[in-house]
Image (cartoon, rainbow, N blue to C red; front, side, top):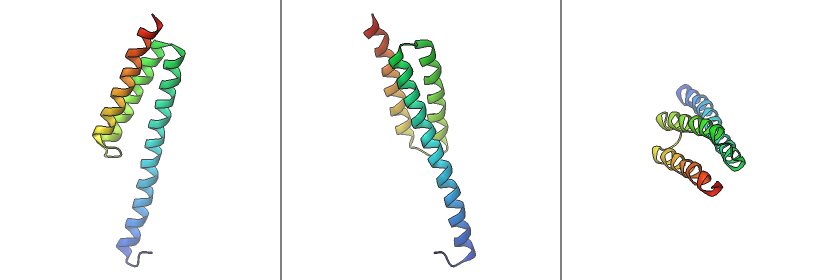
Length: 91
């Protein structure tokens, strides 16, 4: 446990930041699952909307350093490949 006032304050700040970061990561994971479900269902217009929301969340999280920039780029690339592969499989 911290002893100084400054250390106690930093502990409180770190806990709030940790909870905020966890909520952001959870929202990203939930959005990825939504996108997978929509792509699997075949509704490509809705899939594009979900992909745009996911890209926005990933970019925001990377800008705030919640996740690494390369992770955001990798996830966007993976999801874009899902979208590109789906219409070819349907035809």
